[in-house]
Length: 191
Image 1 (spheres, rainbow, N blue to C red):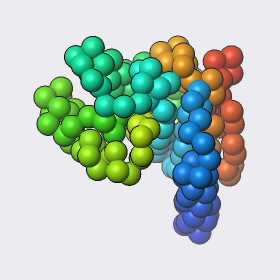
Image 2 (tube, one colour; image 1 turned 90 degrees about the vertical axis):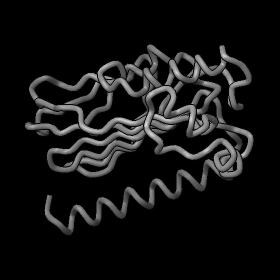
Image 3 (tube, rainbow, N blue to C red; image 1 turned 60 degrees about the vertical axis):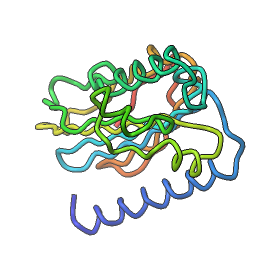
Image 4 (cartoon, rainbow, N blue to C red; image 1 turned 90 degrees about the horizontal axis):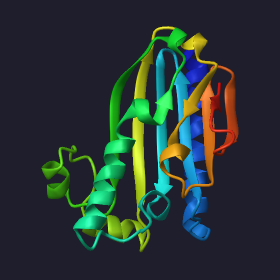
């Protein structure tokens, strides 16, 4: 992409993300609905996913017992497994780079104890920022030797988290910005 086009695309995505965040703040919390932002720039494919805790583990509060904590850690481990969440075309020759998942309710010390990096916020600050609802956030990054071979990406999220009815996906790539609604019946990102 030319530098001016990259800057324009980044600004368009920033505005879209800001508007979506503002809409989420003002709208009622919507269960069954997740959001995904996908950016393909050069050889880098980046995906960010946000889903309500209710859809992922069946509750949105901090886990109250060992069983609840186990559900959160299982979900985080699954979300941090890029190959369990996505399948990219072999012809694109993509290798996983950075992957990170977090849940706003888990303490920093608990994250370290379970082998997760301390990129998340503490339970107290997350509760202040998000009100009474917690969400799961996941970030993925791949380096693709042949990004032009990325016709689609298979999304396996619905196989693991059946509490989500749809994912609103905003895709920014070489052909511009598009929006797609992913469901269990139509789970693939089209580039």
